[in-house]
Length: 113
Image 1 (cartoon, rainbow, N blue to C red):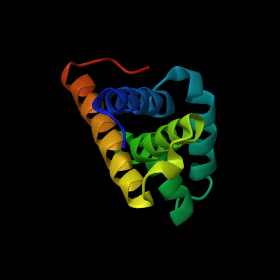
Image 2: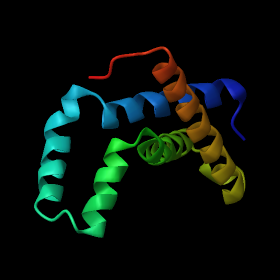
Image 3: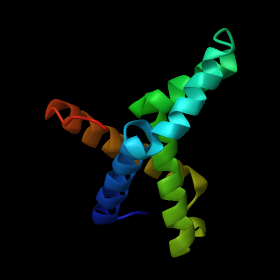
Image 4: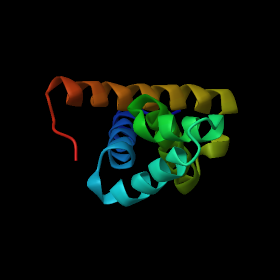
């Protein structure tokens, strides 16, 4: 089970990774290519889902937080220490913290980009 300090750090990493994926200018070229790909067939459910994923801090944050948690569990060798369900709950906690940090960021009026 993850201690509170580690959980907070993973939540911050999930928040920062989400900001990188959704807002940071360094990934503008990749997002622009995906938007252009979507515009060629706007009626595609798959393309609509991909665009929704890359533009939503909640959607992207869920997957980024899962990746951050999985990487941490694998690198520290702690993946096999508890049942898989516990890791599912940890994923919810990390994603919840990342979203909380995103909401605080929005509330404070940070300019993205």
